[in-house]
Length: 134
Image 1: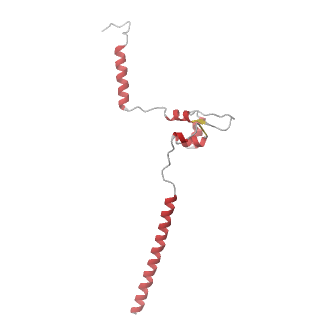
Image 2: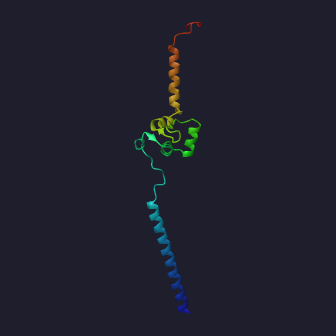
Image 3: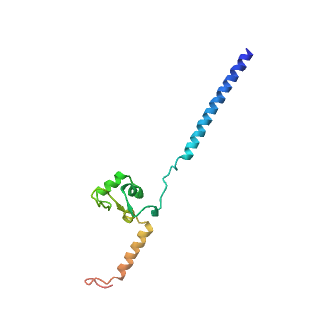
């Protein structure tokens, strides 16, 4: 009986060792696969890496939208583009940059500076001819 108990313990121990080896092999292969995958965040290209004339795919990548969104912008005439043959669409990189930098949201200090400039300029203006000069 004692021999049977030892034999069963050895069998269980060997099974655990085999399972551990399988788990470690799987873990090692997952780690190797992860090392070969690209970085989870997109690689940001510099402006210089894009040519001046861009296709729809490159333009969409450049401004950070899907191709479908870019085609919608074209249809809604929200973005300038060129269709030399009437079908294929091209974009100038400089015009895409202008598109990206439109509708600036001013910081509170910029708004305050602008308001101060306006108020200062009002004081320097020529008085209204029908109002009394103060």
